Image (cartoon, rainbow over all chains, first blue to last red; front, side):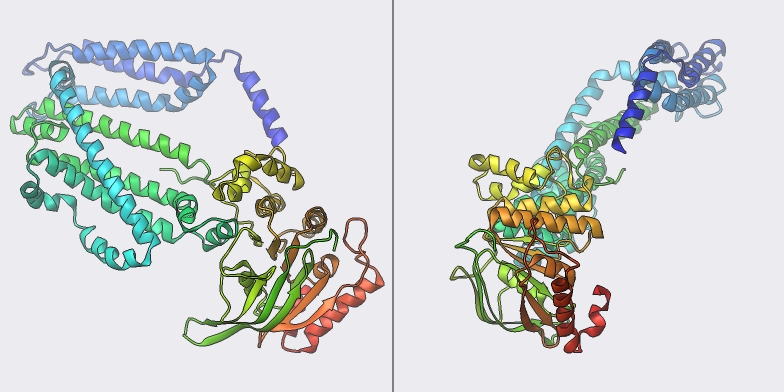
Length: 334
Length: 269
């Protein structure tokens, strides 16, 4: 059976080594071209301010070059061809959406330009304000890493204790049940009093949310490990400590990772909330501050950065998880 | 018995085990067990559900303690689980996060003697014919292969006694017969004392030196049957010989004679 599969794969590979053209790889180029044509050919609305900002146009030129290059490369490179012909329609669609936005803001101005600035202005922010944005990314990342790290360690310790020891379960579990579900931003007043700096308070709020998620899922993961694993490992010579570290924790690791995923998501919420209360830097602060300045291009640019920032962190985490949990049969996909 | 063995004797003295059921009532899981198992002997425990077979195995493994009486391995009281009494379940219970090699090496690693015994792991992988599958994960293996890996994992510790709780119960008839022969081959090579729980009278007669026939309510060893049939070259027995069939029906009769078990064992016939 597996031989058959291998032969099939081999044949497929050989077949694929010939240059092949896939029509769907053209779709991104088409999308970019439409966006570019719209931007160049249709004049901006007469009342539009900053109509001369060229950054969106530059971006589209670069995108055109990249998409053309990719589709040429994909003729010879099979992996890229498969990916590009699958994603092609989507990428093309994204550029059509940008075109639509461009039309309703800059070109026809159907929306009030104070709240819905042209795409060119939003793109402009990335160039004008790049230094501040980078500082904000750095500061947010630092807060997040510190908060997640502290919360993760505390959560693992509590989770293992509650899941493993009946005594710890008796004393700590009710506490977790009562404190855990409180949204971490509720602690803001207390955190601001207890911690000398706004950053300390922010780290606390992030760590708190992470701690709860990790604790609950680590404990339940450990408690639901099959008893037979412990029985077998005991008859193989494992002592209690080895049963904990070599059986209970690895067996609970899918659950722990689920907790970590939930924790990361809740940490983004906590981060944004925390930065809006007292910090003087960070992405959440940036968005909030720009809003009070009525500088909506910057608000949107900030939101885009936040989205990309969170996306990268979550993707990174998936990669780690897929590596560590590759032993699982039919891994649950997010 | 194949090799002359000096270790691996199990003695049970007046063992009785009680449980509390979920309603808080006392249930007698096993009573009046007084047996001597010689080193290197192959014992099968047979009987319907609820006769205390698995309870006896768990007592020997040290996973549970008797309510009354004591169990001894080579004269030493059994107080807790140990690698000297290896355990194999019907479900191979391989650790899914470890590959086959790591599963088999688990015992040596927990005992911190892996480095000096690396060759043993290789040898036992060979013994159970799993060469080439070292890197495979448990869910990649078929039922028979997984069970062989489970056997190797227990055997690599050189246990004095191997406890088998219906190890082939989930396998198809052909795989099961192959596994029985492989188990006998391993038994012959290692001379380990084997205590095996089974539902299958044929399997018990085919494999064992002595059969403990057990009955429920009260759960106890009803009688001990010596299997005095010569073994063939694979250390099994001719399944269609007159002696074989006679002994088989004798055991069924013991189970039947007690009356209480008849309904439970019908599916074994």
